[in-house]
Amino acid sequence: MTDAAPSHVLHVDLSAEAIHREPIPERWLTEYVGGKGLGARYLYDRLAPGTDPLGPDNYLLFMLGPLSGLLPGEPQFAAITRSPLTGTFLDSYSGGNFASALVGALDGALGIAVTGRSDEPQVLEIEDGEATLSPAGDLWGRDVVETCGTFDGAVACVGPAGENRVRYATVASDGGDHHAGRGGAGAVMGAKGLKAVVARGSVPQPAPAVTSLQATYERRFRETDVGRWHAASATLETVDFADEVGVLSTRGWQEGSFEGAENIGIDAVRDAAVDRERGGEREIPGGFRVETSTGESVPRGATPMSLGAGLGIDDFDAVAALGQVCDRLGLDVISAGNAVAWTVRATADGIVDPTTEFDTESTFDFGDEQAARRLIESIATRNSDLGDALADGVEAAADQLGGAELVPTIKSMELPAYDPRGSPTTALAYATSDRGACHRRSLPAETEVFEGDSWDDADRVRLVMREQTITAVLWSLIADDFAGAVLEDDLGAEWLSAVDTPAPDDPAELLRVGERTWTLTRLFNVREGFDAADETLPSVFERPLAGGPAAGNAIDTNWFDGLRRRYYAARGWSDDGIPTRGLLDRLNLSDVVDDDTPVARDSIARCSD
Image 1 (cartoon, rainbow, N blue to C red):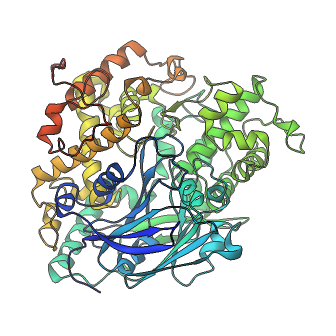
Image 2: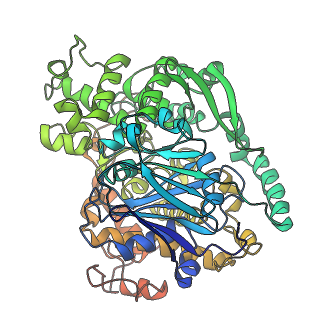
């Protein structure tokens, strides 16, 4: 095991069956650090505009950061690629044993860059810095639990959804307990014919200074509000929170509160839990485990929100079972839940008739777990016309069949279950997210519902920008989503000063890393043709919300357009959402941007604060 700072990626060309170590330019390590930032720089450099996300020329990166395996919380890895669902830059994160094993297995590399396509499905195995490819054989066709159980190492793999190129398929690890979920990285992996990556290794023993930091920061985390909340409830209390404040998307975005929320919320999970997973020997708790008919599941907040309230199902066992179906198939629960919700509403409107494609008397109503299960399985296998259409996403299915106004999408990505009609600033976070509608870059609902009455539009813009930029820094370090809360004061500078890395250890410079990274993903997207027209709000949110504390709320699209332009101006972008030359100069991106990428002039109107 090398003690040198990571300075390479492991490059895997599946078409040529060739593997080699490729050095990372030191400037990249300094200006982008690792994880999201480094992955964005790598993808922008290597992909030609218009690269088919499911073609051999797309890259799939498994990225680490300079502090991977050291920071408090679960170790994480990032799956980075061009999304087959949205066509945008995509970074999706997952924790657990595979991420930890990958740190040791790569032996000084910061990640794996996979390109090409294999004629026969392959398995990539990595140990002590060495990598080998071997035929996947009869693993192709197996679900993620069966696939992960085949090997004696830690495994990240695709299930049937990834094999069938469902555009919101996940990269699953640890037997389906963890998923790099949103945006379809699993479809890219499946399209390349890569069934699984097996990592054998352990995190090296840190230096005494780092060990001391670990103890200090783990104690700090336990003492924070986030730490206490996560210890008690993980993400599952979000169901109760969203319902209480009226932002819980219910029955296909028709209502903001669910009368059965208490049956699928944190108390129901605690009653059903069989164990509490913990991250190795650390004291940062993991998720609740519950039994289902097909094995144990680790539900998280998105499961009861999207597959419970979103589908009108108030039986926790049924919700957990649906979540386990998605987990085993390797399917994003948020997109899958929205696909089922769209089908129920489209059935009621006479747009589709699922009973003609399934041997069932089901009417596909809200609350029907069996109908939802059949449709989810059909999506993952593409074994029906309806399942095949929905496998390309709700927006693609609606373009083909009708019903575009039923379930919202932004940049073709189905929305998480926080309804912005109860938190208008959340609409800005969704619209401007670099990978499509996402609540993990910024989730202003957590503060707006309590403080928003005193906010003005400048406050809204500042909050979203701050959260997006800080998240970009922390995900370049690959920090645990929640334990990362204790890093926000200095953005990990204290940690970076304790390890051997060219990354900056100055908080102000790290903030620039976050802004630079956010700008680079924007440049990637505008090179692919995205602009302000892709960041308008779906018509769903112009209709008043029914039920709950936010009943009657709607979003005025003229107001929102003004808010978005204010955000663009604050970012240093044009009214069309294009970064300006002056911004690129300030962030050292002028010599990075290529001739295919639109860049705006500096004469943009700036909104006053």
